[in-house]
Every structure is written in C-alpha cells, then in structure tokens.
Image 1 (spheres, one colour):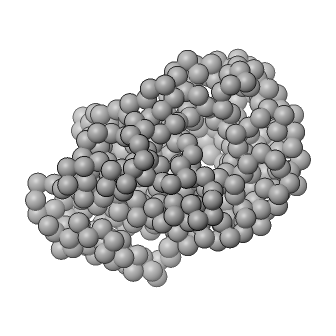
Image 2 (tube, rainbow, N blue to C red):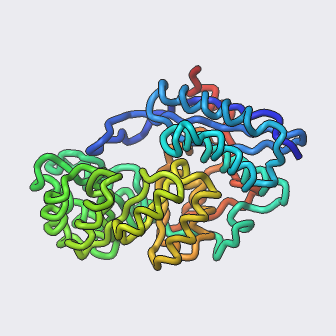
Image 3 (tube, rainbow, N blue to C red):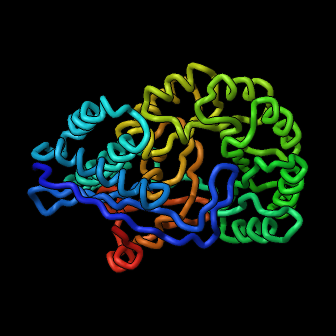
Length: 362
C-alpha cells in the first residue's frame, strides 16, 4: 500500500454553549478534516482543531507539506511515516501548528492501519476494555455565578448520565470562583466528580491561595493552574495543594512530557492528541505515565482519545467535548457515564459530508 495524496478541509462549527475561559472566548470551533488517500480503496480520516480561519489555513498548508513528504510511503509502516514527518518539521520546530499537522496525519494513518486489519485502533493497541469513564466538559465556563446558568448546566449534565463534570475557574475575583464552585457542587451533589480548570489563569502564589480555598469543594483535580510551560510553577502548586494537579494539554510531543514528569509538575498526565504526536506520540507518553505511576486523562478529541485511553495502562477518565459531533454521521455512544470505543474498523470516524459542506470555508 502507498500514500498517494493527503487532503484537508476547514470547517467552522457553531457551539451550543460558547467558550468563555481565562484564555479564550469563542462561539465557534474551527476544525480541519484530514483525508489520507492510498492506492487502494482505503482512506484514512481524522480531524484536528485550529483557532480561527487564519490558523486553519496555516495548518492546512503544513498538512500539504507533510503530504508531499509522505507520498509513496507505506501507511502500514506507521512508525516510519511518523519518523519521516518528524524529520520534515525539524527546522520548523517540534511544536505549534507543525505538530498539529503531524499529529493529525499520524491519526489518519492509524485509521488506515485499523481499516486494513478490520479492527478498531484501540484493539490494535491492546485495549483493556471497550469503554472509558467520561466527564462532561462542554459548559460551566466563566459565567456569572449569581445567575442560574451554572446551576442549570450542571444539573443538565448529571441528567445526561455523566458521573463527572468540569467547571472553569480563574476569574479576576477569587470570591466569584468560590461562589461558582459552591453553586456547581450544590447542583451536582456530593457523589458526582467535579474537575476544576483554571486555563492558565493564575500566577503561582494565586494558584496556591485560591486552590487551597477551592479544596473544600473536593475537586477531583485542579487543571492547568499556571502558564502551561511553567513546569516549576506547576510543581510548586502541586506540592502546596492536596488536590491533584492535572496538566499537559499544551505540552508538545513525548520529549515535552518527559520534562513535565521529571519536574514533578503534575499528579495527572493530560496529553492532547494533536499536540502529543498523534496515536504514536500518545502511546509513548502512556508508557512514561505508567513508569512514573501517574494516571493519564485525555484532553478533547473524545472520538480518538477513547481508543488511546482504552489502551493506556494507567487510564483515568475521558474528557467528553462533543465539538466535532455536528460533522459526524456516526455519533459516540455515551451510556451510564462511559464512552464506548467505536466498533467500526480504524478510528470509527464517519463524517457527514453534507454537514462538512454546510460549515466549510476556504
């Protein structure tokens, strides 16, 4: 089998609940759909995210560049393809949108491997089961805690059957964070897991001070309390708090996770599939997490991440963020607080071409 061409398309999908965090405000999510064509009938498909049309176009340019580098390669040799791409972006730097493109293509190549063997990717990787515990993450942003929005969203998430929800913290007024946490905890009750994400919104001293106050609401973790690349700051916060620190969504490639783990900067490893190097990069980080006896949780991309968590030795919980669901013809199955691994060969992604055409732009 040979790769003959790699194509990409950009779409802008409206969000049911707009994003409002300490670092980002948006009512849409930009998605780049990637198709890896071969000299057979098998096409590898996946998607990654961008942050606005300009970045989406830049990502697509890099996808095309790596497509040229991979033309003629055998996609079944997934590691070789990854190595070819890694060399090709060496002078661009192993991070940023170059890694987005590499990661997306790697995922599509694994989709080909799964389709060629008529097996879900999770099973090829050695899954421990057919589902992952999940929490609902598509809401509970930095809304005014004196309004009923947070309470209503939290109750709705529990009614959907989720056993965990994530709220955002990092407001300018720490007292507002306290009130928001109280509102959400009261809405979900004591048995539902509550994650808190600061989205890099604090300095180290504030993270320690506010984090100590938030611990009374029993968070399962406090996520990304300080700048994502401040490993020393994360480590200081982790030492000061009893609540576990989760981070890693903005760390690039396995080398970055070695530095993160070596610094003692997290209690829960949280790779993002488009920054970690796709399926290939994720599984290397999963091995690091196991060696360090650290649980691993996912960031975004639930349709892909469910395969990877199912095959990770220290799997913790999956972030359910359904941003891509409007362009998918086959939806994820969510039941009793768990997301099921798609039974279709490969990644199980089946795109709704009519929806893609509706949301597409050049």
